[in-house]
Length: 441
Image 1 (tube, helix red, strand yellow):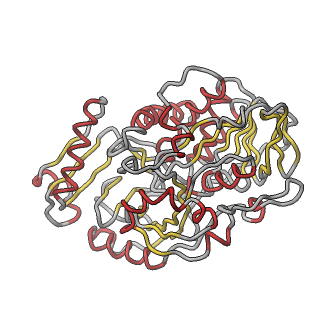
Image 2 (cartoon, one colour):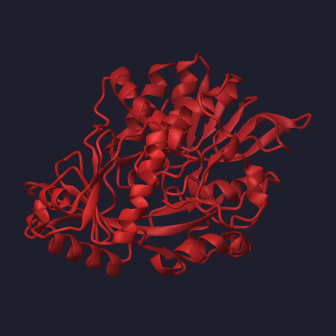
Image 3 (tube, one colour):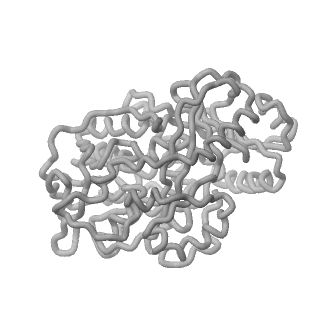
């Protein structure tokens, strides 16, 4: 079964004109469109398939500051506030709650790393508590074993990947924007060297501002416009179990397995960092850029298969604008999960948490997590195309920081002073090597 996802209706008619067009209906795109619409900007949100159907509904659902890279921490902290604000404004249940995130470990080096981050976090006004062996063992009683230590971040939380993006998209309509599902953007029109419109499979929308929030598809789309964006994806496999397990925390991370309570009372089970590397033309093109990341994380990766090549989301080919594109051939990236990883994850979870022993599996799925060479996103307007803002490469962190990223994007598009420094998200930084700059978390 695929990842659960709430379905919402589209706006009936495509507008002839909009102040801004957002391409991509994942959490980044819907949050950008939401904050643009809230500012009174007429915005059209285009999604080639269903809102939230790719990685935005296939992730753990964590909204965390804990262990964030320093370049993303301010965005993470603001996003937690915005998750609460959006929930109140919409009057909808996004599944967001500050339940706290709980980490356990038997590795002293790992604990030392968490303690080092805690010391940094204090300087940023972020609270996190290191747990002694006795405290970790007491809090981790549901595992039935003793622990060397742990960490608890009380102000962090989780949201529901099945509901968040679709319900925020409903908020776009509430504030006067429009949502267009099964409507792929094929390309961008220009006049006098800047954006003048977006060509879709259903017609042209005249606009002077475009936000490209296409996730794993972003680099191939940028290539059509002469924009070089180093990006590559890995295939992550996770599963969920039915409701029924008692006495488990809402969110728990260990080296063996991580578990997250879902909105229906079941749990998502995942093994942190485990992913399959599916070769693609784009991956080969940018392979040298990703050497620093590969050197740091190669032990977590497994050889994949040809699914990525076949899907075409990382193609190097140019496509015509008057005929169907790869986005119309593959409306939703729905790769097959690694059955080996799913089996190992389930076995690890049931061994660590006996309460899961008799709870049946609900679903298993995979998704493509797009990344930049340093593991930090790009939120920037390329120098060669004014009016085009790229927001992609969130490297597995996009769900939690989606609201903050969306607000930042809206402020940049409308020329307002951004609430957070954003020079670290510039595209030009990726022209240099990432040695020593790869995100730790």
